[in-house]
Amino acid sequence: MSGDENLKILFFGDLVGKPGRYLVRDFLAEPIAFLPDCHLDIENTFCIANVENASHGFGLTTKNYNEISEYGIDCMTSGNHIWDKKEIFTYIDSADKLVRPINYPANTHGAGSRIFEFNGLKIAVINALGRVFMAPVDSPWSVVIDEIKRLKEITPIVIVDFHAEATAEKICFAKYCAEHGVSAFFGTHTHVQTADEQIINGMGYITDVGFCGAFDSVIGMDYSTSLSRFTTCVPERYDVADSSKLQLNAVEVEITPSDGRAVVIKRIFCCIDKNEKEERT
View 1 (cartoon, rainbow, N blue to C red):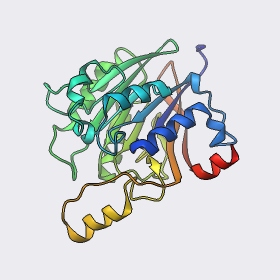
View 2 (cartoon, rainbow, N blue to C red; view 1 turned 180 degrees about the vertical axis):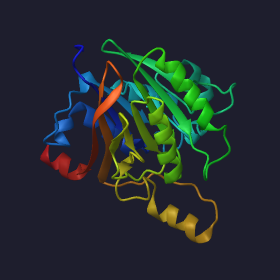
View 3 (cartoon, rainbow, N blue to C red; view 1 turned 90 degrees about the vertical axis):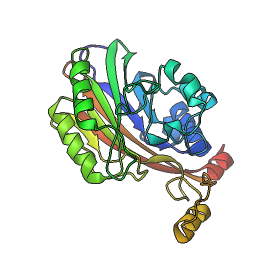
View 4 (cartoon, rainbow, N blue to C red; view 1 turned 90 degrees about the horizontal axis):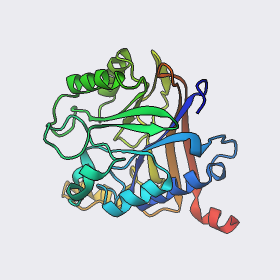
């Protein structure tokens, strides 16, 4: 990458099960098939995906971690569901593309931030959990800011995935991160893409990137089981929705490498009917 060329970041919203995984795989192989006016140069774009729901909607298996790596994803962020597949404890410490939330206790397996080498640049990625309407975790406010300060000594490019439920918490935390020089801040967890992409004090921001998976669903999950849980209040296993119509939610950000400031942010939302696509091909 030349010194005057912007770094392009492509962040995919939560991958939900096989529909989400395969959708992202196909998009990375041929973006123009999804977006006819797409000018993405995938080989020169740093690709991040939230993968905490990638394995049948809950957690991440070793097999799926390896598959997603092969698709061309450079970094995988996560959230509270990253622990749902117990095999995570057998490989998370050696999974060099995977970042788990940093505000778990200090002795938690895995890494809460990582620095990636890409096209001659160092890119720092932090994952964090919100606390409003979420299970108890350590406060992200001091933990994340201290980590931002540490990483900024190494690289001006710092990315944050804030996995949180409450919109107000995401907005407030994002503004705080922007004050400390973060390059891009992606909200995840709610699976509903927000239309508020903007640049805040040189930081690309969106409240929630959305998700990748079945369009005819309840945030990627089967409608009938979701309905049963809400109407009966009886715990029931969620199933990933089976739908021919798929949606892909992502955000593209351009960052100036020299100072780590975002200069462009673009929201991506596209739907594709896999049956119609198969008929065309």
